[in-house]
Amino acid sequence: MSTAATVKIISPVDDSVFAEREIANSKMIKSAIAGARMAQAEWRSVPVAKRAELLTALVDKMMAMSDEIVPELAWQMGRPVAYGAGELAGFEQRARHMIAIAEPSLADLRPEPEEGFDRFIVHEPLGLVLVVAPWNYPFLTAVNTVVPALMAGNAVLLKHSSQTLLVGERFQLAADRAGLPQGLFQNLVLTHNQTDEILSSGLVDRVNFTGSVGAGRSIEQSVAGTFTGVGLELGGKDPAYVRPDADLQFAVENIVDGAFFNSGQSCCGIERVYVHSSLFDEFVAQAAEIASGYQLGDPLEEATTLGPMVHGRAADIVRRQTAAALDAGATALVDMSGFERDSEGSPYLAPQVLVGVDHTMSVMKDESFGPVLGIMPVDSDDEAVQLMNDSDFGLTASIWTQDSDAVRLLGPRIETGTVFMNRADYLDPGLAWTGVKDTGRGITLSSLGYSTLTRAKSYHLRLPSLNES
Image (cartoon, rainbow, N blue to C red):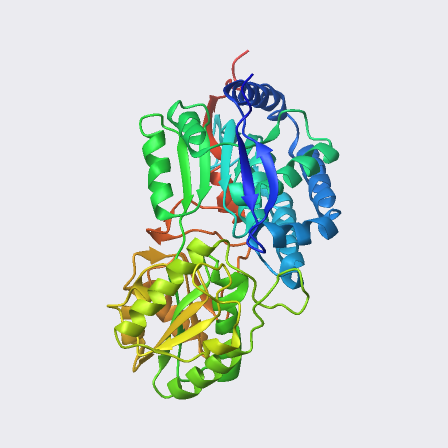
């Protein structure tokens, strides 16, 4: 008798096996898809207000598990428990916002009245949506699609990262406890090959994926010819620009936090900074001081402010990127001797601030996804914009200034999905989350997020003449 295939979560905390789960077989996948289709056929007719009631209960049930989820997150992907509740707060904010705006976002659209006709556009659900979620913000990235997709009348299959499988289970538990119809939401443990087979067979109506550029290209190749809708959020190399009128201390504190929070493992985290030359020396000194004060260690300890990266391989990529910059003439400002756990092959990676960098270096051009920050001086807005746009990515960009008019003038020139002023590394659920270039395509959140989870259907009705008997 053959043994079922499994996947193991190797914890970055101590390299132990934290959990092991059975991979779905073909029979389970076929049953899940059939069950989802059957449930969606009825769910699409459920009034939006009733959907909102059940999805609100799902959020409530998830938040009730907070005390269990926070340490679970630390074991799975290394985020310190001191910050674990923050992701759940973001999950709640996004979910409740998307529930609240569902009714007006899904309301019929009516053009200017035309005598003798009734014309309107309805938002019909797509059917079955597959969510492929990553490990770095496992609740936030998943909820961006899961809740609005269900609110729009779709069924949802969730394929979570093998590093954060228990997050998928938490979603399933919350859905079941909230009383969602059986089969409407299903968490599946799938391999990459199984995901590819589902997509290439046209078995779902849309896939929303968050992950690497390479994996995003694979998703597009898998759905080629099936006409399956695709949403891709593929990361970034997000810049910050500090203008000469910026509140220096405020800018330094928030930019450093935006660079090193979650060990730098954020698609919209700050990875490169351009500082006006009049502020450069002081900015760099303060940034190095703050970075040197991080406490790298066990994420289960409350005193830890910087946990391990997801695994040693990821940390070594950043180590190589930093070493290459140093070999090319950059200078490291953080004394590594104060971070004893940092060593080759270890997921524990100390924060680093680099100066003397330029755009010939990988650290300023390629996604780092780790706690390293390159800082360059600039002499003008024009120079800053040119450097900010010199990237294959375009997710967010932040400008630090007291002049909002300047931001409104600079914003259209910056190739990015979101322009921040005096803020970074944040998602406002009331705004569209989108990107340009290799960051991907599609929209989640805001009322526009519902447009990607529904299809338009037009009704053009010629009314009976009132003069006809």
